Structures are given as structure tokens and as C-alpha cells.
Image (cartoon, rainbow, N blue to C red; front, side):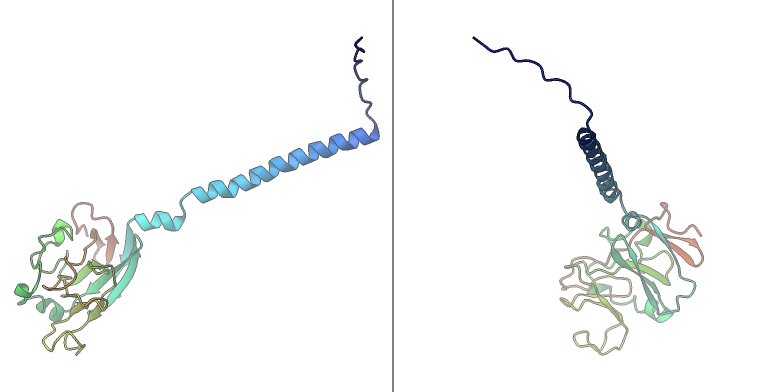
Length: 210
């Protein structure tokens, strides 16, 4: 014969029961707060940082104090970008050695259309280029004419020399023949927004809007 199972009497709200119930509720609330607190930094980490946004955005550079012959390096999209104020002597040195260059007329698309000229720039005296060798990504150095650097020769007209594998470029970033670098240095999109201010990364389709 089966013995009937009688329902348990309802628990009285004894002091011990009340304490247990309060402890359970407090633990659950604390767990919920901790979960929210942990989620906030995680969600924040998914949002792009100011630096990440700036790397893809255009940037403006004031070149009013850039002296003739001086080079300024800025960062755009994680790359070094050179701004060179060329002297008349540096511009003269761009002439007379086309036969020694791999792409003297800038036929390859390493520059915007408005920089496809002998000086590869909007204004002859201001040269803007990505300072990364087109061979394996080293950073060339600027070597002036007559510097006497080994490997460049006594008739070196001045330009850029990559110390990693010996590629050489003239003052317009045009690569010399028979060098490891296959193409000229890259000229990024840019434009003048005033007589002394450059906007790099945004050419507005024209180049010179000053």
C-alpha cells in the first residue's frame, strides 16, 4: 500500500529565512551590476579610437615656416609623408637625366593626374611624397648634391637614397634604372587650401584650390 505524500507546510518567515532571501537578492543584483560594468569597456573597445579615425582622414599642414631646401615629415594613414620645399637648384637638377630614369614621364599611376609632370607636384617648389621605398618598404633618406656618399658617384645631382637595397630617386621621387625599386615614389592626393596650407589625403579632384 502506497503511503500518501503530504504537502510540506509553507515556510515561515523566520529570521534565518529572511536573511537567506536577502543574501540571494543582493548576490543577484551585484552580478547584474558587474555584468553591465564589464560590458561597457567591451563595447567601448569596439568603437574606433580618435587616432584610428584620423589615420584615414585628410589632414592639413601649415608650411608657412618651411624654409627652401627643408623637408618636413608628417604622418598620414600610418605612413610618413614628406613635404619638401625645393630650391631653384633642386628643380634645375631634375633636368638632363631622363635617360637614366625608369619612368621619367610618370606614366605609371604613382601620382594623381595633376602631379604627372616633370616635377611631380602641383607647384614646382613644393614636393609631397610618401617616404616609403617602392621596393620593400624601407624609408629612403634625402642626400643633397655633392654629399660624397658611397655608392652615389661624384655626379650625383641630389635626391633620395634607400639604404636598405640601394635604390635611388631624384628630387621628384623618380627612380633610377636598374635599381631594386620598380616604380617612382608615391605622391598622395593633396591640394593647397591657401598659399601656405596643404591638405593631404583630399584633392577635391583638382589639386590647387587656393
